[in-house]
Image (cartoon, rainbow, N blue to C red; front, top):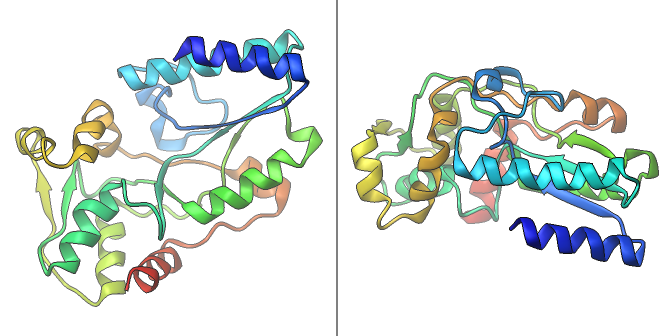
Length: 228
């Protein structure tokens, strides 16, 4: 992957093109997930995070050397009408649709930030068309509310008018189910993010662009309205 991004940087430099790179938070130090900002320490513990940290290093190193102009736009876990490769869709929405109990990886009563997919598109367009936004890291707009994993699931149940018992999946079960559900296998590498408070702070973006992210309650309603 590093070779790919080195080639990308060289190509952008050659053609005087700018880079807007959409990133995640896998590279952040797990000790600082309770209030992630653009200045959160980089200290990945999982393989996925190490790859992301290397890509970010390559991009910002090229920026510092004036080789390219670039934006790194980071986001937490996605949710939204077209986001099917997520736990909220795979083990909550689909289970409720089948009148089954929703299932969850990790702890239920810890804070977890999710970003609404349509907010990502709006934000990236704003950043890409704002000259003074370049050569920085930005956190994409995410609600400043702090729902727990349990509360996200309860919002989904409320929106679907279904009340079920929430089940948590032990690590052994996750390994077994992951054979048939790739999203769970993928998440095992960063499963620690679902076992502790995980709050994504996007104040920098929200204040700069006077942007109000969609609320969790409205986001869930839109998912259910589209899917139904």
